[in-house]
Length: 415
Image (cartoon, rainbow, N blue to C red; front, top):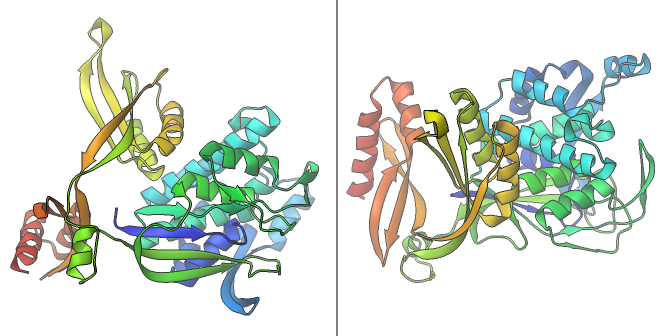
């Protein structure tokens, strides 16, 4: 992991604030509009952004304005509040970038699980009300598109303010935090606190984005800060109603020394705790397994792999293994149960020794390539150009992947 994002939520988090912060940090609004058009619901809304002031600070406010067409259909009894299967069908049919698609599906599934737990019904039967409305679909899918466009490798999030008071929803008056938000916080053991503001600060949409995509919650990770995007909320509050999105680069010991900064000492293996999930499957198509891989990586899996095995009655099958951090175990298990035909998953907790890694960049005659550098005991032990970068340049320049890979290694060693 190299490119990091940190969601800082002093005034809470909402879907439109996430989208506003991404546009503010540089994601083109036209790109988001273009990809959202593939969902086939563009006639229901107009998407625009503007710069606004929140307690003297400038931030980007994204608006999802419902169109007359949306209101006309709604007034004639054709509700645009959708159930989960309909939303999933829209996302799957849109052929979005793989990571954006998997993340969007995971977020809506997380929302459905929380709402279902509150109402005592299955996730697929949940009537989303406001959460499944057009603006929430735009906020969630647009946020996933923006994070994918930025090439974010790992997301972190701060603790969240509880807010207070009440809010009016389809079921009537509810206390803040709403039951769905509490369920979402509970699912990831999110640290929360009161900032003294009795308003709804964290919406189900915003919290679902964070608990689905964030690796952990708390202080900002060690990073070299590149940019900060400010996404504005709708209300004026005693504090600036802004979500701050930090974008930066992971700090590693070798990189610190390269920059002349005092680091954590020489590169050496570190121990970390991981969860290992295993299940064997003999009645699932390879395409479904490939899709499951993408969904697992989008939900924080560190590695996913499969092995051919012979099962009982000599049936051919696969052993599917997932490695993840313990805090992502529940999300990965949910994906395995949802996307595969497995009836059971084995769990184990293990320790693994890892080399510190850094992503460096080199210039080849065909363009820039990222190179992953790993080491132990102060010496470099492994150097590998990133496959995706080499593949993209090979296709663009009509040359072999091996040639780009060779030139990237040559450029790195010549330094």
